[in-house]
Length: 116
Image (cartoon, rainbow, N blue to C red):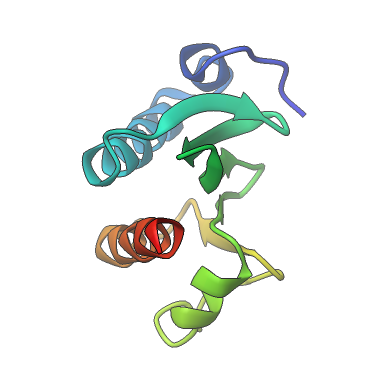
C-alpha cells in the first residue's frame, strides 16, 4: 500500500504515463461530481459525495482498479464483461485504453444513487 496524504503525493509514485491516466480519472470524477471531496483512503484516491463513498481508484502492478460499489458494477456488468472483476471492483489493464465513456456512466450512476 502506498503511503500518501493527497492525490499528488499518491501519483508521484508512478511513471508519467500512469500519472497521466490517474489525472484523467481524477478530472472525470471532478467534472461529473464537482462537489465531491477528494481524499486518500485505504491507500488510494477516493471521492465522497455528501459524506458517502462515491468512487475509489488505484494504480496496481498491471492495472487500474476502480472501486464503485457492487451496485454500480452490477448495473454495468454487460459493459464490464471483458474485465476481471471482484465484488465491488473492476480491473482495467494498463495495456488497454481506459473505457472512459463507461467509467463516466458508472460515476453518474453512483451520483444518482447517492442523491436518492
